[in-house]
Length: 481
Ligand code: BES
Ligand code: ZN
Ligand code: ZN
Image 1 (tube, protein in one colour):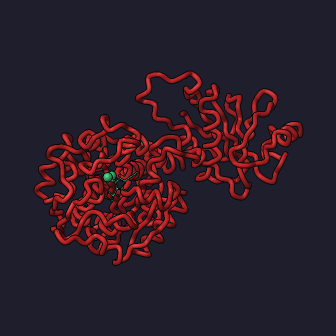
Image 2: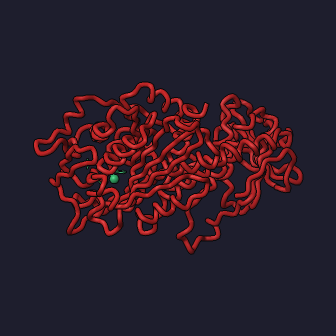
Image 3: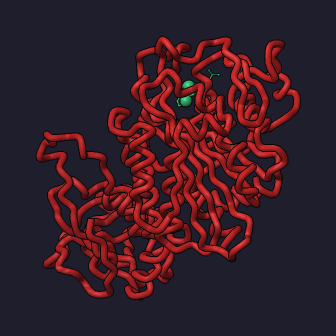
């Protein structure tokens, strides 16, 4: 979609205007005259977000779109609703009228983000799309009071963030025969924006003793990879923020094989890594003034004659031994080595990991909140603040020695599962054993990173890109001032 900001009407015949709640029949737009106001009344368009109707207005057509309460107007949601309504409507262009609303550049730029998120589809593997499903909308003009300011803000801030979110979505949506560890690593290496990339192959990881990560990949024909992305936009010598992501490009469960139904969703088991890659890309593209390092562990979890067996004991890079009682609890094995390695090497100021780690988090929080686990109240506060600014929701759950005990094994230093109860918490406790005293938080995004049911107009595909906006806000608010 081609997006521009302007303060005069474009050739677009179609103009979307917000209708606010409690302003029944009184629109902010002068295109809607008294007759139009009466029609809004007749159509019951009372400002409820997403409700809409078309009105004739001389040469043009007005899309009167419910926009909620005036005081709480969210230009991003509003424009997402407009794009959702119009993207396959047959119309090629639309103008969204946001001038006269005193919004400021940031909010106007976010309207463009909402449009891009709502306009996103993943069609690259479809050769037959019904005409009625074809995306027809290609031109968006956002009418605003200060087009230059909004353009500048969008180009340097919100646009790159949207680029990162859409990249993360692409990565999650790709099938497992198209993205697997080695070509995923190459794809990261090929990103524009000036990230420094380093790839560790199996030989290097073997030398480092990363047997927990490597064990997950031994049943796969595809070579495991660890990718390090560096963005040095801050002061030289400032300790970096570290982001670590689970990148299981497909999770069959391994020998502890998953049931067949819905197994295809496990192509999204690299959602944590996609969030990290998307964030790093966004930071580079907006030239963030911070030192940030992203690390992703990329593996495919397969059953095979040589695959890891339940009962296997592996020695992690940290030296701690792990009894692998369930080969489907593989994400924590990948993260154990990725976290230990990255913390030891980069001595970060703080570290956040993201992973589609447990089905249990979906039972606990649904797909509306990611689970946040951290022993640090300070980091929890920072992430909760970033959650507010970004709109990506998180909910803190407890860590406690009581749960940690559930991982004790008579055969090794720990086992990789904690039993039926509190599955997301024991998974987080497991990770905690590999982070030393680093300021660390874990986000379980199994419910938020991939979704088959969606209601938010900005979420258009299975891969949501969750985490990119949250992490970007966290970096901006804590490392760029
Ligand atoms: N990738 C899954 C978690 C998952 C499940 C994500 C469903 C999204 C939707 C993870 O590797 C896994 O299989 N976890 C197990 C852990 C169990 C064996 C302790 C789970 O959640 O069942
Ligand atoms: Zn698994
Ligand atoms: Zn998994």
